[in-house]
Amino acid sequence: MFKSSIIPIAAAVAGALLIAGCSARLDPAQEGTPISFSAESLLLRDDATKADIKEGTSFDVGDAFSVFGMRTSDSGSTQTLIFGDTGEETGATVTMTASSWTYQPIRSWQWASTTDYYDFIAVYPTGQSARMAISGDLAVSTNFDLSSDNFDLMAATYRRKGSVQSPCAVVNMQFSHLTSAVRVVVINNSESSSVSVDNVAYKNLMVYGDAKSTMDTQGNEVESWINLERNTTTVRSTDYTGSVAAGDSLECDYDFMIPQSLDQAVGSGTDETKMPRLLLTYTPDGGVQTTAGICLKNITDQDNTAITSWEMGTKYTYYISMRLDGGLLVSIVTTAWNDVEAETPGLLIP
Image (cartoon, rainbow, N blue to C red; front, top):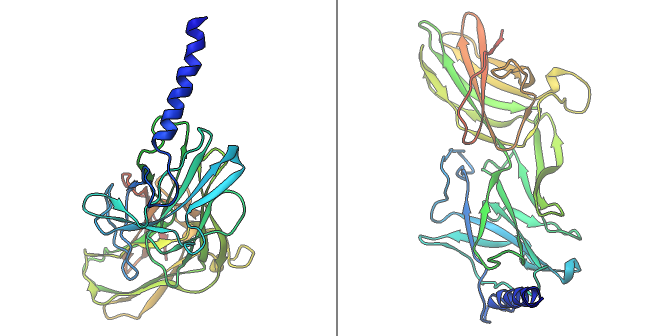
């Protein structure tokens, strides 16, 4: 009896000490354990004019993301914004220095009960997102417009419960990619003729939308795209100069795309000419400039299965083999950002 009566008392004391050990007012001038962050991800560099891929698992000094945070207390009845409150709807900027991630002004943990919890949402790059003015759980939206935006959009969510062993530990944000990355590689397989690749572009795509980041009731990450618009505008148009000699190739830059269906026509119906298309404009040596419109839904993977959508966090490389006397052979490589590439058998475009 004596042993069983002392266990809950000891547990209660330990819990009280744990909460008191990192309890603080939100005023950063007060003493308390500051809320601090770390971050890691497979990362692509933000560049508005050239989408250079940057493989790796860490960020660089000077990189920054926006963070939003909410504390839920009183058994779920009270919600208080910690990051992203009025006047800070675009979040607080967290920047990587040589030694740590920093932001100003510093906020501190304020635990009142083991039933309290904090929700955090982070978006990379900084300055692109805003807290959604909706009631209930924390949610963040990021507008993405193919006519102006071409950067690696990433997000991360994290729930810290007051019942964990170290409630004041560093919050590690694990970012994931919200876009698809698409590129074209043109290979000149002619025996002797060179060819000029003049332009690569796309049309009939989902060109506008908002990436929404939030969490479900259990604190699991929920990423989705809302307010999507598909139209016939030609986007991601890139001009190239110079010729590609026989046996050589041209490797285009990655473009970041809104994840989307590739077998859906603009408006409605099943007209393939209104479905997402890759436009390749080229001029054979001594020939006439030609634009090939490649219906993307017809390109298959290594299992001969049609790639009918671009998914979040997946890279797609379309290999176009130019046989100037026999048409264009198009194949595709699809990989996750950190997986091994796998080629496809190809599709001949006459």
